[in-house]
Image 1 (cartoon, rainbow, N blue to C red):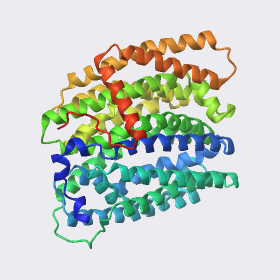
Image 2: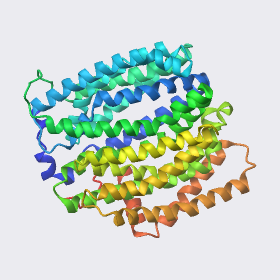
Image 3: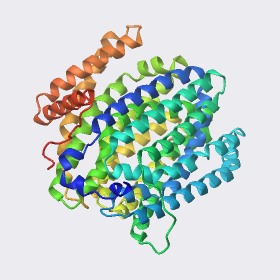
Image 4: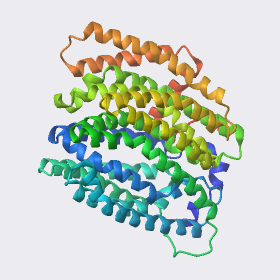
Length: 505
């Protein structure tokens, strides 16, 4: 039975019916887990203080770095590989497991240093407790990768729902019982453990003993380059939180990190159904340049169409959104949220450069680009730090936009996708979203006296839908995306399979 997890011939032969197998479940699960996370955020923001969120953010900024070593890039190595066997995956499983144990030990050893760096003694016990998550993560990597390789996104969606719901319930109950920051720790551990148990149930493959002299050198090289990139990328994505926590303290970091995570939450939920499918599908198409190019550009078009108006709405309505969801004590996070949103207009599209690098096996080029981008981003954090979190957010957004298009150009050189086509694909959603922003600003100026944040947000959402869909309906690509999303919604409700493109075959 486990042999089915290694053979992908049935996928490439019947790509039209299997490329988004379980895709409707992915969309439904993302929407559901997004709602669960938002509800938990609303509840926990009222039970916990910004400083308590800041404490967990301080540790997570470090644990995220150690997490890179528990994966070692081997998850994508399994997914991207055209041919792979049981022995190779078994060896990778034991390497990931050993890396998870090593990561746990490293974090425990670093915990006094973390506490000293932030001048927060509480962080020693918090870090040591959170380190247990690395063991669960190490045991999860290869089972999750095999399910992804087979495009079994329905099974992964179910696992994700169970993990998120279980962790949120445990965290909220703990917060009501007065566990304070430990309720957030519990959420992290429970979600990681539940996901491990879930993928082991969903994937019947079981690792064999480690076999020496197995041909995994190419896999390790691929994973090594990806790990090197992830390390540099980690610094560029998290050094802002490390520096703000060190320079400005837990309260300021709590505001910044919550604004950052709240902005990313809907964006990730909107794009992940496409992004989750993209790398394994492009990997299966790497020997078919025309289909590879068509699939990638279609995915980019869909991502830009969905995320750009959503982010514009979030930017303009940021103050009402923050107060409604988190309460008055979080109002200072609204400006940070809006400034970070400027980069979020483009970042979902820019992130697709990684799909091209990984699916084409060019992780060495990904690493080189990671060094360049990380240096620029960290420099922007350092430049803005003394002026406060808003300045850090502003410089970060500026650098992201300046780096994004060169990243897409460099990544596309390794594939059949030409850079001009990428720019053309995202140009029309961008031109459509600008008048939307002007309309929303005009609405707030005219009706800003409305006291109800909920009413303003609802009215702004209705305006966003009518204005953006109206403009998009005048463009052929816009109409194509509208029809595709309507089809996705219909098939998600009826639990039927969803094909991203009917002409993939």
